[in-house]
Length: 218
Image 1 (spheres, helix red, strand yellow):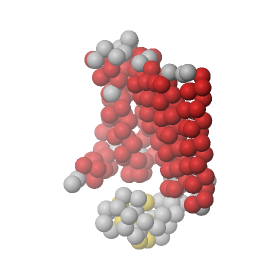
Image 2: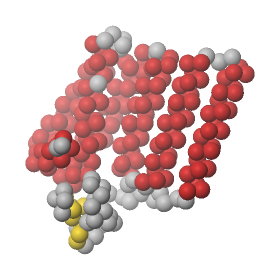
Image 3: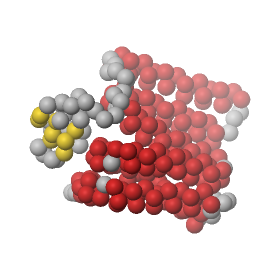
């Protein structure tokens, strides 16, 4: 197992540098507990092609909107969605994260797209149902991994667990501000977040405390 002398954390998988601080790891590599992403490093040409394709898509979207006299709000929403998708794919090309990190980030991308949808269209379906249900799905996904992998999962994915807990309570803000038509999904999301916190406290209390200190240390 590879270890970081700076952070005091051990890692499985084919890593040569600490993903937390960037320092060189010492020790003998051991197989990762999670599947390794098959996404390969790509050339600068591929990233430039992705950027060019994104610009072309945004240009075509704006041209089509002007031609069809579409709403400027819907046009901005579509362009923003294209840009978010570009950033997500570019991150995969540049950093080649493992499969679980791709899934974790995908949940965040879905929430970002729903937020764009609500801001531009003002549709309360996004705040009442879609965002809470995505949050619940993400929390359940992480709860299962915490129950199965415990300390190993917490050590590598602590910041995503924090995001999930915060986002689990976020729909309650929509209810409090009148942006949600039904409080039940928001309450269910908050309950799921509480369950995740309880699981962390029962199954991985020490590891969770260690990771929290690292995340919030100055």
